[in-house]
Structure formats: structure tokens, C-alpha cells
Length: 142
Ligand code: SF4
Ligand code: SF4
Image (cartoon, helix red, strand yellow):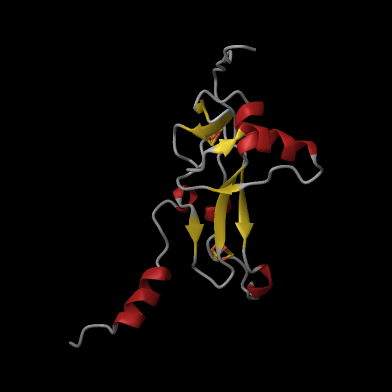
């Protein structure tokens, strides 16, 4: 039997449902294209124990030890953006959000949704609940 052409193999792979769609960070099973995102401002509001911060060149940067997102964000920028109505917004998740994360699913091309609707609804299940512990960090000098 002839091997499947590469283009068909890629398409077949993209149509395979993952074992645990809840743990995936992107879905390309249809033309809508959905991605998981998290809101870094919520990491601070929720006193997540996985937030780290460091100072460099007179700025304080924060990030996620669990690498749910990879960016290191200037705390002043984040605080200033949060004062505006639209807020700082979300960043793309690199791994499945944890229960303490404020997470969401962003759809790129919602107008492309077919009459059948979403064929991977489990992808949209986000972790619910909150951690059973809280850690309070004191930033030196404050
Ligand atoms: S685990 Fe979630 S809430 Fe905690 S720092 Fe990372 S992204 Fe933020
Ligand atoms: S609409 Fe559903 S099937 Fe389509 S990309 Fe989004 S999660 Fe996947």
C-alpha cells in the first residue's frame, strides 16, 4: 500500500482528538482555531504562590514559575494597564492552566464555526476552583 501523502497525513493528524483535550493549549480541529489564555493580573490578585518577581534596571518584572505563560512582565506596565477599563488583558498559555489561574479560551475566527458547532467541546473545559493554600509575599522596601 502506498504511504499517505504528507499533506493528507498532516490533515489526518490535525483531525485526531487528543486523549485529554482539557490539557491542550490550542485546538486546530476546525477552522475556528482556539487557544487557551491566562490573565497575569489575576496571578497577583489571587496571591498565587507560583508568581516570581525580580528587579532589573530599576524595573520590577513578574513571571510564572510553572511556565503557564513565559513572558516576564513589567509590574509598572501591568499596574498602569489595570487602571484602564480594558485592563492588561490575557497572554497565551504555554501549558494547561492550573486551578489558581484566571484562564479563558480565545477563538480566533469565530465566524468560521460550521453548522455542526464545536467538535471538541472538552477543550473549553477550564480548571475550576482555587488552591487550598495562600502564600503572602512581602516585597522588601514596602
Ligand atoms: S500558576 Fe497561574 S496564577 Fe499562578 S503565576 Fe502561573 S499563571 Fe499565574
Ligand atoms: S471551535 Fe471547537 S473544534 Fe473548533 S478549534 Fe475551537 S475548540 Fe477546536
